[in-house]
Length: 332
Image (tube, rainbow, N blue to C red; front, side, top):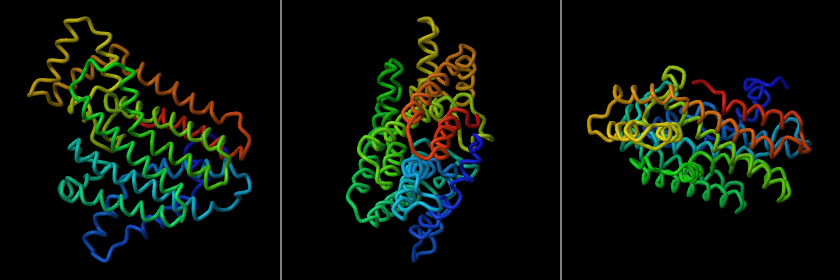
């Protein structure tokens, strides 16, 4: 396999197509409006990172998989992706985001009430789907990932405006955001391939570290990204006064007067995109954004070290390494 994310998607084309069909069938509704809303929402998670991780892990663990993964894998992948979709809808409402994947968010296309209910419906559809695997393991792991994700989001809300947040505390917060669903994806991919406990744990750790790296790069993109490339509303973290890694590193580099001035500007009631642009410029100039990006890259490398020298399907393992590289190098 050539080491590009496009080749990874080609390698898994049949699996991803079957996963999407499972999800679309589950999202069907007798009510046309409900069906329109939930199907529109499913277009937001375009990278399909979580199903890709699950399918690659499934194939990495079980070298006997040649043509297609099992129905259990497909249902688990669709369920995880539906949970992710629901979380995106709710995140956009909380952040008052306007665009996602170059589309109007649900709260803009319709309103926040529709968004809340659409997210809830999609979440229940995910639970229904994982229950079709007729085992308690997948259900327990998926619901645990949901709990940890919600708890992480709530913990982050509790840190808003706290620019004295220690870096270690920041890592504790992000461990409950992107990481749980990626961790769950890798774990279920290994589990439904019949892996032993040690192997499941190895891939679970890979998914967790990959999730941490993804969230750090997401925080970096909120500072350095371009809306046209990212396809979603940027700078919402800063405008919502969230203490993300680039900002915390920048504040550490400031002298006391600069630090107080910056925090006062962020906390001012008139803080807007124009005010944020100046802080973003200064953060980039100090190297704080690049430092945060380097930390994300180091964590992605740590993830790869969990699987680099393991046995199994080399093509799939190469795909997982490519996935880790993609997480770090995705478009600004």
